[in-house]
Image (cartoon, rainbow, N blue to C red; front, side, top):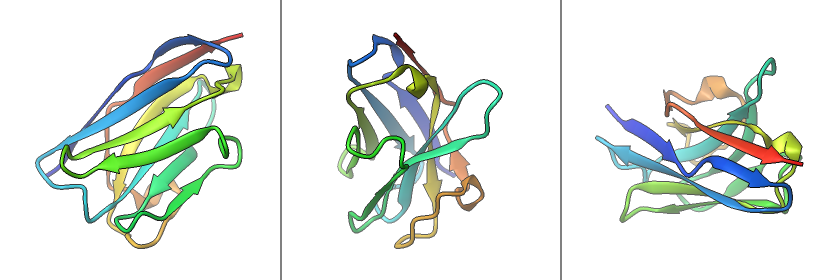
Length: 124
């Protein structure tokens, strides 16, 4: 059983940056596709980014060119570097694990382990 714990969220001004971390315990993440999702109040959970075991990436249209997903297998941690943040990026951010590597799915149903989420608030 894997446990995912996100950290790094907080309050930032528009145009600023944050780096989220997702640390895993219990199982190695290296052979899985890892993803980041977000959910704003009253909205559905939205795909943000994902990274396969081989290093392929995919990003949601609203974050392309601003966010970067990466992983450190030695630390069993996945990161989400968020630059040029906008007010509309405000949400709870979740990391998730998918057993579907090498494929990247954007629907949450393809991910079977989730963290508890970390709040990101961008002030305009």
